[in-house]
Amino acid sequence: MRMPRPSLLLITSICLLLTCLVSINARGADYTTIERGRYLVEAGDCASCHTAPGGQPFAGGLAVSTPFGNIYSSNITPDRTTGIGNWSEQDFYNAMHSGMRRDGKHLYPAFPYLWFSKIAPDDVRAIKAFLDALPAVRQDNRAPSLPWPLSARGVMSVWNTLYFDEGSFIPNPAKSAQWNRGAYLVEGAGHCGACHTATNMLGAPKADKRLAGGEFGQHWYASGLTGNLRDGLGGWSANDIVEYLKTGSNARSAAAGPMTDVIKNSTRFLSDGDLQAMAEYLKDMPAEKGKSDAPLSEKDKRALSHGQALYFDNCTACHLAGGTGLANTFPPLANNSAVQSPLADSVIHIILSGGKEAVTSSKPTGLAMPAFGWKFDNADLADLANYVRNAWGNRAPMVDEEEVATLRKDVARH
Image 1 (cartoon, rainbow, N blue to C red):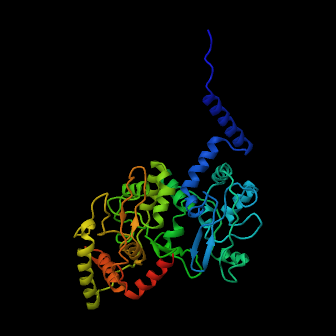
Image 2 (spheres, rainbow, N blue to C red):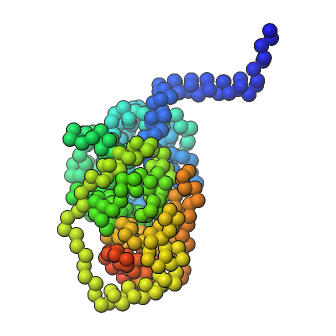
Image 3 (cartoon, helix red, strand yellow):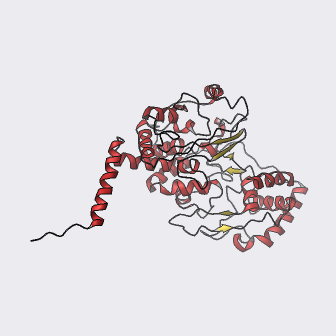
């Protein structure tokens, strides 16, 4: 009996597979390790920071805005000249665990080694294995735009002494395995505190404000992840958190600004088990103590009355008169923790420039809100933002037109 001849396509496919396997083995890592590294890179949202707009994935060049100037993400592809192709596993571990470059100089904490320090050594090796398997991209790294003395990396040794506790994640034996898995992801690879924690004047996270919300680049505010009812996750269920991280929205809120990139490049790829673990950990975060609502003045009440009129004329078609929105379509504004954040930056930013929801496989539409900056002057926009933040049981600090004017100028520059 004559055996059929294999097709050219089959032979080509086998050759390509063997080539890939040889390449992987040459790098000293197996497929399972590389795939675990891929998952951890997604958990760490590495692509969002290490990919510039229109640039090659992981080749760096993205400007990370800080109060002191721009720091540009580095090339982490395996290019041997401009990337990390010549880095050993120990070199890479030193960067992740200690914030030290291969040449012995300090990294700036725009690279979140304060959190990556908690990633287990085996996981760090898996991350390196995945990055080594990427296509090498030759792209020079850009020097940070920082004033002296911050431009001298040696000053980071003092900063690290004050604010960096180097060390691995230590499980809490009093908590469940799922809780500890969630803690490992939130406090380690996920580095949630890098955005969701307020910082001091030197850019270090405030220990007493951990995960209670914080400002980050270009006038966005990362909402609190503590148990606060108004501006935290106190009113969210664990399933609400899972749905938000998986799809970018839920019945209570929708991701906006940089958080849409986190959903798109990171959390939507995580397993349901890991998302549930993160939710369990976050739901165990206590509410902040001592927060109270300031009374409204007569001037504030007049501003809210004007803001109400603007809202009814421009916003009720989507968000409805009671601010309830339309479930899983237009996010509610009532009882929305992002709307009630201590700073109004995100609300004002969205009114000015509009926004688009994250596009995910389970919610592929990616609904958008139009920009209204062209329509409202600074006083009108302040009144509208104040109404949204203080109607339907919401309470949040008032914002004035001068603050809106400053934010408008900064947003226009970017």
